[in-house]
Structure formats: C-alpha cells, structure tokens
Amino acid sequence: MSEQQSRRDTEQHGGHGNTGRAEQEQDAEAARRRRRAQFLRERAEARALRERVQPRRAKVARLRRAMRMRTFRW
Image 1: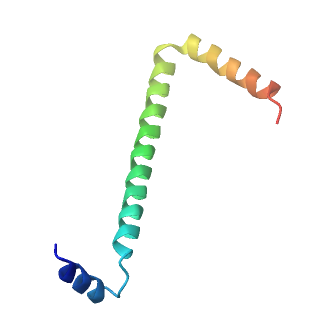
Image 2: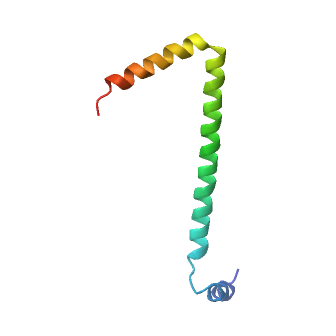
C-alpha cells in the first residue's frame, strides 16, 4: 500500500491512524477471553468426569484442599 493510499484511508476514517490498532487489540483481547473461557469450561468438565470415575480419590483431594484452605494465612 502506498503512502498516499494510507494517508487517504486515514483521512477518510476520522484522521486517527491508531483506531485500527485499538480495534485489533480489542479483538485479540476478546479472542483471548473466549479461549480462556473455553479452557476453563473444559477443565471443569474434566474435573467433574474425574470425580465421577474416581470418587474416593476425588473426595480425598477435596478434603485436602479444604484443610489447606483452613490453614492458609492471608
């Protein structure tokens, strides 16, 4: 793209050259949030499956986690 073309595009879109960059950053942030939400859903699903498959081990892990939280100091 030539310098004149990019200058024309900038002038047509309000004179701010950074608006495209801000939109890209927002899109990237939204995509990151979607990927993170999907990851957290899948992780919760895997935990639930593991608890159903190994209930005794899951119960012990739950009790250990509860004990750790009770003894944790802020």
